[in-house]
Image (cartoon, rainbow, N blue to C red; front, side, top):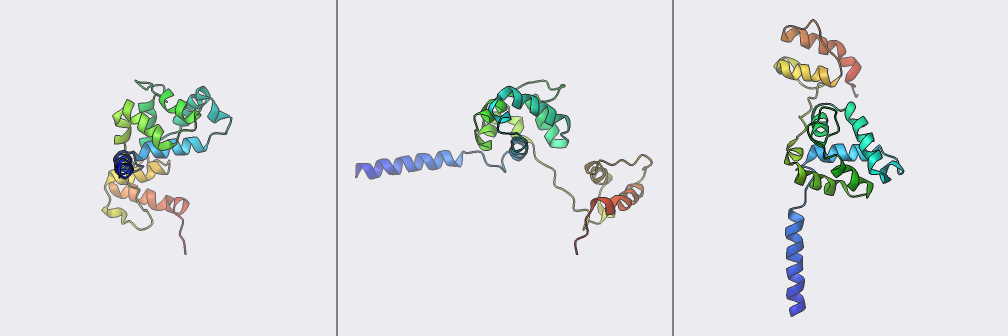
Length: 172
């Protein structure tokens, strides 16, 4: 009887801790960036935390939007105010799972898990005339394109329509 009660106690404690585990949806930018970054490392690079830090700084030079902000929080950018890059590099060098790395980062800086990816706009199906200029600019920015002569909303729509065949694949 005592073993049954003890077993039930441990199962309930385990269930409580499991419910507090960090999920990908709770810290989506961290999970995405760390997974993407770790996947790009070779097995030799994954063993040395200093190499990981240098590779992450290189990765951050091309990061955009929320990924760029994540790099800023970690200290992967030259203009970063803080530097907790080693809090990510060391666990990665020990082959720690991404969820545990992000959990540790969240304990150091709560803002890391406040980052959320913006919802992408499906240019193929959306009515461009119903979008705001800010969203039209975001589409161009996502494509790494600019519109120097665009002043009005119609100008942005025309530019997107011209570039659409280059960036949007029409599946039959």
